[in-house]
Length: 591
Image (cartoon, rainbow, N blue to C red; front, side, top):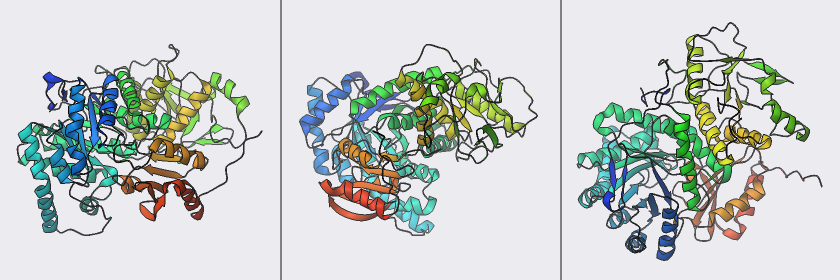
């Protein structure tokens, strides 16, 4: 199976164009030869027309090309008429997307007023009960007939009104039907979307795109790769565009790093026609990151790389860390094999950082680049290696994009049966003008994150960020975001929308203030139940909006406390963590 034209040279996946609105009146074309489109979502209450119009215009002003608004019931969907009219009255024809979960009646109302409707196959006409049931083929077919009965009328209306559609699967909300047949897997996500796509195609409707979103960048990458492969296998007329996003990415550096790993790695492989960076921040901030990220892709790829198409060293559809030989970096620090991925710094950074290191620090350099017993190779040339315990990296100045160069290095080592540990670099062009911190963060996250998600790398070196402390912290944050190493509390936080039942930014800050010292604990903060239980499946604890002013608490995906007044909910979460023996008291800073 092949998910892209080449993992070594850039070639954008060919897709049919999808029309969102009237292109002559401010609408957009998605896919085909058109540039990647930037999207965001409103956080305002959909019944608050003025707030929604104001926020939409704020997004348009910063370059948002498609605005998404939740419509949780028919009543909310009906107000889209007023919101769209208000946007048009303010002089913008930006396409509006209605975000639909659970309620076909809301979709049928929304399609009257907006240019696109997003449906989630996991909960459109399905309720999530985490029920176990072994479906026979006949029962499964009956379930699909029931789904078509609910979904078919919306398809017909989209076709009649010249609307577009996004068939958007979320890892956190797969239906019980899919979970029981395919499990909580990338294949299950893909098949969930294809079930709905077949209904659309059978009715002669093709103006749709797909999305495969997860809060885990590894899962998200695998899903899109598998989807692109399945679409190619189904035939050339299945060339629908893809919308990319890491859902519940969080805020600040963590949210940007997670998004860059998932979205950026796929864009570098030529996949993706629209993107949304989901941050627990004000919506316009998402567009700024979209802009910065899209600007980096041409600088990190090349359509003209002179590379032999060597078989990959990894399975692109199922993560497995590359097998490597364990070595000693010195000072008792082991690298490779089953050891955690190590963080290396340059000598200049070490000189600045060493005086600040305290015993027990989790964030610390574990090797100095100039002091390593390191063999630097040009993977585009032939090479021979006698010793599997020799650490290897790509030499600076190679005329290849960094991702392609390390993939090629790993592939050639694999072909030779070699298990040398590999040091990853974020850039092979060192000594250039220092990058802006936001750009350095995105570039390092895309390059190193993509390779880590391929299973490549035993140690990493970040050099694009010129600040010593910042580069060290960035390296650790990339490892945590890629799911390769834990050094702090991990948060899964949704980006807020009109469904959110509390102030996500404020509550996230309060929860972090109480729990950010809990190394290795994963906390999910969800504004509502749409994706909550599923996306929290690998979280230790969850804080979920259950009703206005009321919070439900979860352990894993199981709800354990209900209807807690919001004013008491953070302390109740802390008590729940203590009950499960995951709590430690924070260390007081020296005065």
